Image (cartoon, rainbow, N blue to C red; front, side, top):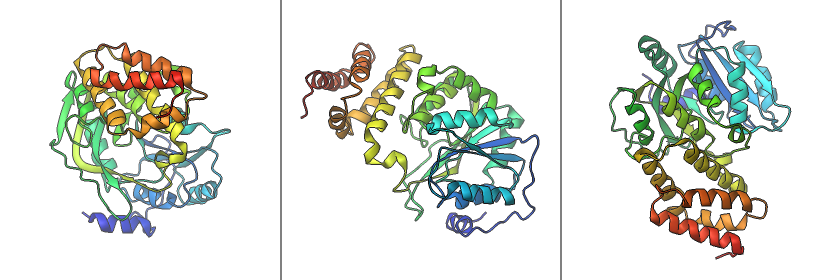
Length: 349
């Protein structure tokens, strides 16, 4: 197997291992869904990681969300080389979740893989995952993520779970094995090969109010939560299958969009409380969320109070929902009550 550094270099230099050509597939086994907005610089590297897979029975669906750079031009040029590429152009900005939904309903594959245009998939992950999913009829295959920048400055990801088959009722508990660590939520949708039928079922179980929101954070979490809730079986692969490349221009790292990111988090939390039944699992989820967002990131509270002119009613209603819930810990309720008081008085600390 090619070493990680060599694989990154190979994809970045646009070198093709697979030189058989890329013909259109009428009945693809896997549909790769990629919403895209102004990612012309990373697009070829992303595509090479797909084209260099030995698994070729796929389609690649780009949903362009009104890009203003050279993204569209590059995709159209790549279509001439790879007939499996399908380009959908949004008439107006839709955001990631809504663009993915458009791509899913356009897709023909039995399985879905969501890959962001900043990122890459690992060598041979498609073939390995697909064989497992088909042989044992898993609803989805989950693999680990590399999280770091292009210079391979890796986050410390240590997986403590061996390759493992998980079925109901234990499936729901594996929401807590983010990055292979107990009590760390798995927010991501990109680290999974998913049955299309299950993904559509998950979409249909989410209230239209949430699907219509323009979210720039936690949008993966909405569907991901329902995959665990509705799925019957999955296989956990210990190996890294997806490279999540952090870039300075990544929208989820853009401080200027903080108010949208903040609302996205609140929408996600509100969704969790509306679809759960207040059992011990949801209690642990609530504790984790509030620890991660409010206690470890106190700047969110400050920015919340700076961005309420248009959203006061939404935040007050959501905070009240949390405060009234018996499963929210008292430490979190104290913070929420301070927030509520500050919003009502429009005070800034």
